[in-house]
Length: 148
Image (cartoon, rainbow, N blue to C red; front, side):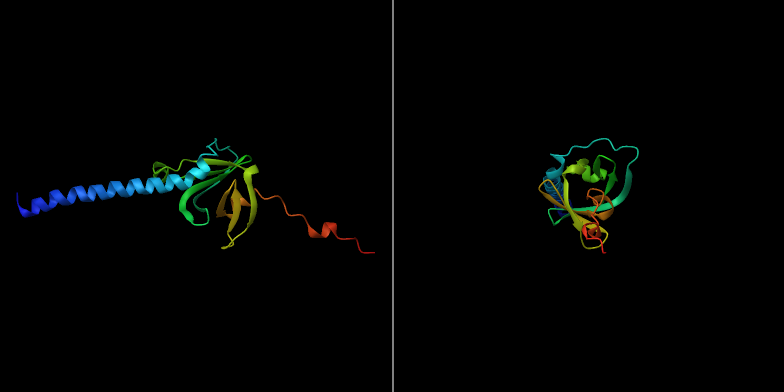
């Protein structure tokens, strides 16, 4: 066996092992982060009246970003988070979050985003979908006394 062939025999298992290790590590991290939602909010069918947008981003726990890899659908019952197929392969199944469990919705930076709590999980997501969970703000002037 020549020196080049010996190097190749050694190098190929190292590269293959590195790829397998990296994939397993990524799967562990993604499934651990996403399981805070997927264990409590399994996927439900998206209703035909839903509004859906692709290439959306959310952040979980204040630091774990799933950037531009989700389709977010909003219907009367749920906020649906549908990861791309490659993300699903790494342990993040679609979830359907009931509107009743989305609380503490407030504006965030950048302005196109909002923060909220889903159960005990902090999320940062596009404002267009989270604002639907927020109760309408009461008009401050309604409680003011009528001038005479």
